[in-house]
Length: 178
Image 1 (cartoon, helix red, strand yellow):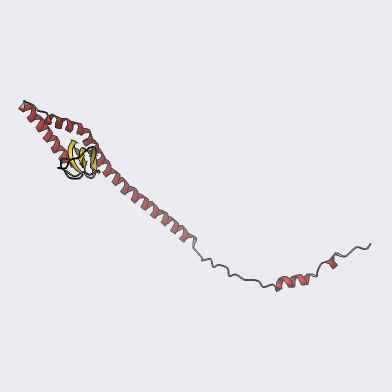
Image 2 (cartoon, one colour):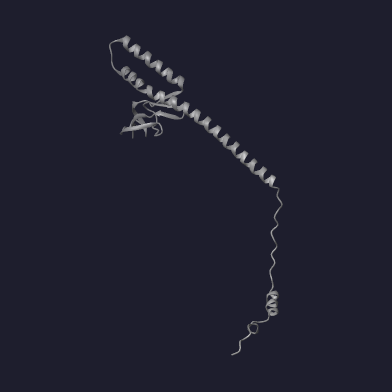
């Protein structure tokens, strides 16, 4: 047996090269890479970081000012809330019948002084008979049908309400008609 020559089985190399070269090749344009200065990139990154830190600091400053103002208002509201039982007891004492005029006069003077202090702090006292019922200010604990009073009218006040600015310190406890 004669050995077969391996070169005779393969096509000549020139034909293979011609086939590869003859196929159309799509040329794509290389994207242009703009020449950037590394110092300019570093400057822009540092400037951006600096601006972000400055903005964060400004937001922090504004937030702390707002929190400081709110904490003063909250502290004042807490102090007023702690004095409300005194107001309630003085109001009950004023509503009790008594023969002692000096006692009644002393309670009235104490109540007037407390109301003056509340007014000085900016506290508004609300909730009286005949007012219109507002669920944002009043807590309705009872309901009655009374044709003499209008729709959603306060018929009785069990506890006065107190407001400090826009914040309700205590809702007025009321009875609502109709």
